[in-house]
Amino acid sequence: MYIEWTRHVRLGLQRSQASLVDLYEKTKLFRGYENTVLPGLFHTADYATAILTFWNTFLDIAHNDIDLAVATRMQRQHILYTGTRRFIFILEEQTLHTRVGGTEVMLGQPDRLLAVMSLPRISLGVIPAAGQRHCLAQGSFWIFDDNRVQTEGISAGLDITQPREIDLHVKAFALLRKSAVYGQAARELIHQALTKHQHAKPTPHHAQTVDGDIHAGKS
Image 1 (cartoon, rainbow, N blue to C red):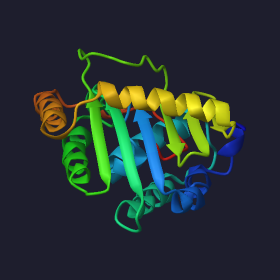
Image 2: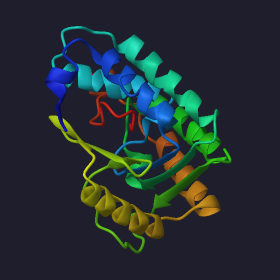
Image 3: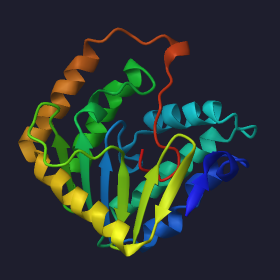
């Protein structure tokens, strides 16, 4: 299914965020790959605010409900702590360095990421920028169980249910997992990014915008 963002969010971003609650509640296995920004399930409120503010401006959304949209996105994170769901996420190293909302926001986000990594039902891998690669995926995507894939672009998203296409995304995800590092090696990459942000110059308020996923809570 093709989802055009300007139509999907014409009544505000909060409805877009809320539209995923049922899918999240029903899914038992989440597999996600992100190449630019961090998954929505791992966001701090400040990080989420920066991303949704960008999209609210970029898409010229007349109804400004960013605070409600952020609250909905943060509420979705309860699935990390309830039920028996499993979460497997693969992040490009770039996601740790992409400046979202400025220096202050970036100093708070790594602690959240490290805390999430410690949860028993979450596997988080990071693909080093200079590491050996087994897959050259060109865009972020999430796999929900074995029956749905969601991908997002600038103007629209795709909700994929065709088994052959899902199988290809599963195959790509397995290769991306093979390319990633885990545990202490992943934490070291996160700490390196944090150190870089600590030494960065403060970002002017007017420059604190960023591209990122709008809808699937992936970012």
